[in-house]
Image (cartoon, rainbow, N blue to C red):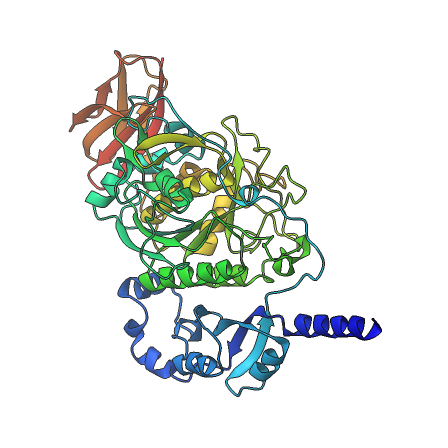
Length: 534
């Protein structure tokens, strides 16, 4: 009996020590980087290079491709290599302790980093607490241009940018998410397809281009819909004319640490294509294998692989937005990674009254950085899915609504330093300089920031025009030093209701009482102004 027991213990010891874990093998360098510097277009598109030039960001070794002979060397050692990162300069493999020692001895390996960190049992939380929408129901359709999207667009004050002609045109957004079923067929995305706004797609989970697979999560479809969806007289997204790159990095049926690597690969591909924005309603803290789960102390912006890569993306001039998370009412009620990184613009959720949504996750990160950075509507927000208008809740939907505002702002000021842009968005939010752990610096205000930048620009002096009387009863007049080419009045849902050419006044006496927007096209400038009809 004693021999049998000893045998069992020895077998158990052998199994534990032979157990593999996911590790990241860091390489020593990039021997062929000189070839990249001689011909950057071999790795990056001209659009990617243009973004760097516009923002004054030089190329560095992170931009060079990974050394393929190193990948081959790992394969020659018997490892299966499917995921690797040029930014982090390494590859992921599953290895036993003995194999890790072998890897560390290779001349082309600088170190081996472990994903596994927890040895004890970690309480598991339902995946929907992490990022899934809290609800989804069909809504009653309206007949206005903005329709059901009006309230969420106005809450963060994007309409002034739309009226000024900034609807995301020419700005590219990578949506990194869990799947995009029916985006290729649904009528709510027909406008995107017809105008060639979907530029590329890829599934980094399956290594195919089948992101529209109807069997995967539709989470990404609803996220995309909040920005670029369009149903005539029913719904308009927050940046309906932006271009999109659709990347799947999340398998909604499970939680494995490889998903961090899928996200990193998607972000690197987005950079190659030259995107301006990454929006991602994903976050990580608990994995199915508890060895890989994070604690709150890990939410410092630098511990996780995904947070480090997200910062690199931001340093490349990409404006990175991520959802804070939906764990505000759970035992884990904190933000998740990569929302913990200081250069990632993380978004919390508020309701229609501007109060924090109960589910919205709490900051700050563990080194005291205020998180989330700001908030947008995430309670009963409108979006589209397939051909239908739906209402959903979660920081997952607040994030793309805000991302659309960023796209419109980048169209207006494409060369503005992105760190300055992030700072100014915080400073123009509703609570600044105060903040809360659930709302960050408050509700974002894109129109306020737009005005601030215009008013400090040498190109535009707002005192060159004025509208009067305001409130108006019969006639609204414009005083301007410039020749007026046209006046356009829009109602509070964005519908054009009157236009005059070559005049400095416009009749409003037949308008119902309420709030309106006047778009003034001068000979050399474009202005907009809100007015009241009494």
